[in-house]
Length: 237
Image (cartoon, rainbow, N blue to C red; front, side, top):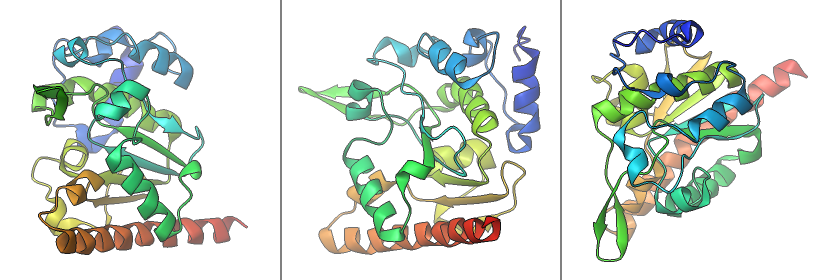
């Protein structure tokens, strides 16, 4: 375990009880944390992160984006090819499908904060293409402090985990999205926590019919979120 000078970052991580079993590597995002843990300082510091080897082949760090007082926060796996080039999360094929599903579910993306568990694009070459590779456990652990800091700064009321990497990073390796998706989960990380599939998994469906079924299920999960989001707005009105 690392013993960083940034004790606030360690306290921040320890407060996330679902992260309590994580062993942060000796070299991690914590080594690159700024003195001040405000959003702008964190984002700027993340741009120079070398807490794991993924920075070597990535174009840039892709930090989260959205309202800093957002009630709703989405967490995915890692940036893809288009995100790596643009420096923004969820702007590639999966992001466009995500936007479409959000609109169908009645959620305005502009009211949400969207980020990823890992901030650098992990890929392997195939001809001229860069193909996504799933980050390993060490890479996820090394990047978790950035995510914990984002969660602390944004402090969302509703947290939605997109896919197995995000869900298992925050809820434990035993968590299975396929078995517990679309329902509210008991977690200290936010008032409301829900896991569902990552939109990229829908794009990998074996045929158009299956893709349509998976997409409809994804939209239904998002409608569960939308209902609570609207209820919260009515309660505050």
